[in-house]
Structure formats: C-alpha cells, structure tokens
Length: 498
Image (cartoon, rainbow, N blue to C red):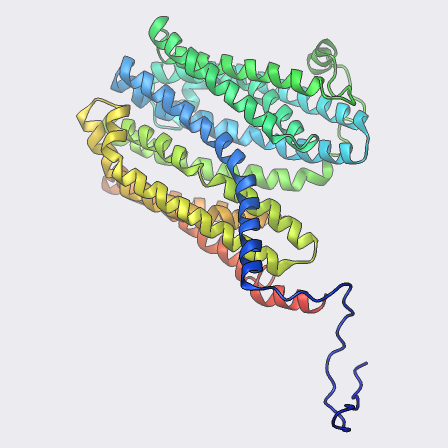
C-alpha cells in the first residue's frame, strides 16, 4: 500500500508515489560510452551466432551452382534447363523431410542436460530407424514415380527435358538415407553437444568432396546429369560416415547403437523399446514446420511449372537465377538464427524490451546485408550470367529476372528476422498459417497470369506476393500485436511489473 510521507525539509505531506523495489546493488548510471560498449557487445554476439550459420547454409546453394556450371559448360542448354524441374522436386521433398531435425535436437539436448546418455542412445536409435525407413521408401518410390514427380513441373513424357531431369533426380533420391542420417547426427552435435563448429566442418567436408567429384563425374567419366547427381550423393554418404564417427567418439557414451543392431531394428522388424517416448510434445511444432515448408516450396514448384511452359531459355535462366538468388539469400539466414536464440533467452529472463531491441538490431544488420547483396546482384548481373551460361538467349532472360530477385532479397532481410523472432517466441503454428495463406495468394496470382501469356519476370514478381505477405504480417505479429511480448506496450508493461 502506498502511503503519504512527511518531508523532513518542508514539513508537509507529499503525494504518494510507487514503492520502488530495493536495489540489490549500487545504482549504475550508464554513460554514452557504456551504452556504446553494450551495443557493440550485443552486435558481436549476434555476429558470432550468425556467421557459422551463414557459412553452413550458403554452401548448399553454392554446390548447386557448381552442378549448374558443369552441366551448362559440358552438356548444353537442354540439360541445364532439365536441372530446374529436377532440383525443384528434390528441394521440395528434402526440405520437408529435414524437419526431423527439430525434435531430435530438442530431445538429445534435454537428455544430456538431465545427464541421461541412455536417453540420447534411445532417441538416436528411434530417429535413425525412422530416417532409414523413410529414406529407403523415398529412394524406391521416387525412382519408380520420377516421371510422375517431374510432371508436377510440367515435364511431359514427350519433352526432351524428361531424360536428363530423370537422370539427375533418381540418384539424388537414392541419397535420401544418407542425407537424413547426416541431418540427425548434425542435430545431435548442435543440440546435445552444442558443437556447431563440428557441424560446419562436416558441411565443408561435403562441399570439398562434391567440388572434386562433380567435374570428375561429368567431364572425366562423361556421366551427364546423372554423374553430377551421383557426385553429390556420394559426398553426402561420406559426410554421414564422418558424422557418425564424430558422435560415436564423444566421451560419456555410448551415444549411438551398433550399426548391425540398428539395421536389424530398422529393416528386420525388431521393436524399439519406448519408440514413441518424447515425440508427442514436439509433434505440433514439427507438423507446423512441415506445413510451412510444404506451402513455401509448393509455390516455387508451381512457378517452375509455369516457366517450363514458357520456353527452354526462360527455364534455364530461371534455374540459374534461383541458384544465384539462394547463394545471396543465405547470407541473411544467420540473422534469423541469432534473433531466434537471443530473443528466446531475453524473453525467458523477463527482458522483453531488450529482446525487442536485439531483434531490431539484428534486422538492421540483415537489411544492410540484403542491400549489399541486391546491389552486388545488379552490378554483377552480366558477369554472373556469363560465368554460368554461354547461350545469349539465356543470358538475356537471366538479366530480366534481376529486378524481382533484388526486391525479394530486400524483403527477406526483414522477413527472416521477423520469423526468427516468432520461432524464438514459439509461435510456429501462426507462422505456418501465415505462410500457407501467402502461398495460396501467390499461386492464385500465378495461375491467373498463366492465362494471359506471362513471362518469367511476371512469375518472379508473383513470388514477391508470397514474400511481401509473410513480411508484413510477420512484422506485425512479432513487434505490434498485442499477443507479442515484444510489442512496445507489452514490453514496457512487463518491465514495469518486474
């Protein structure tokens, strides 16, 4: 209860004021220099989290560019155009399957924190059995249904793109067990052991092997598009073996089951004790992330399908621009990761204003990177196109896609940080709903355009509809919604009550 008190200087009653909590230490008045030091410290913290994620995430599209380069230089425009539908189907399937890393990372981290290594062994046995079974099904069914899958990108049976696209897609699908094994083991390294440096080393190893094997398979062995795909698949399996060794040699184990026992469990019908334990509490988040990935990737699949009908040269240009765009885009991925981790920690500590300030600083840094990459794409558009292809029509089509790609990079600078904030707040379900709504709107615009002879730039501008809706609603949900602890009013009210 607030009571009036008598001032010893004036002898009268003063207005009641709020009872301030007792300070647990001396009051520190921050100077401008102290504030600048604090800002620089948080910036370094953001960058220290961002740069490993940036390097790891940017390597995969660079490897796709490597395949694009060798196929373009050695096999011609038809083979290059065929990579577009094949890569779209592959990315669509693999990015959905990769959501298994979410529960694995959480379950192994909780088990190590509770000092229960046996639970890590059980979780990895269950997860690896699941991945081996799913991976084998994807490889077998994908090989049989490859023509049907490619029809989703408008590659008909009579199309000259079918054979080179199928030759690339089938070997990549046979890499599914190795890829999923690698994903699970990387999630264990980053979740259970907090060793993101080891994850980065594995990514670099796979990149090195792929860089060596791709020209050897395409040029030396005349393997065609299948050679490029097998080079990536072999690199993936080699990285998975190295990841297995890294996890198995960690002290405090055993962390992994014996390979023979795991094979018997996965394919000979032996039951795994407590198979469903620990998965239920993460099922909703995993399902939401799967829906989000499905919606976003399906939009790109529809875009590729429409561009395939426009012509071979626009499709080849679309393939080159997609891989170039992803190479630039993942320079901003680390800021999403940093904002997710730091915002989650600040909110858990009861510091929503600091979380909001951190997210805005991360967004400012991401926008600077987005502006720099957009400018680099504009300035280097001719050099990039000439480095990837020789055909003049493809180069001209590539340059027409530069403006919408630049706009998309700028949108991503804000959108990814906003989504990182939502993930830090645990708002997975809303993010999935927003992406699904935006994807539906973008697909509707593209289908309407397909009736009036669209060009490839028209389709790319339609993709910006998806990104713009996600960015606008994501920013509102993260920073302005009454439900968000990062809204200015909620953050202020929360700290007043502390």
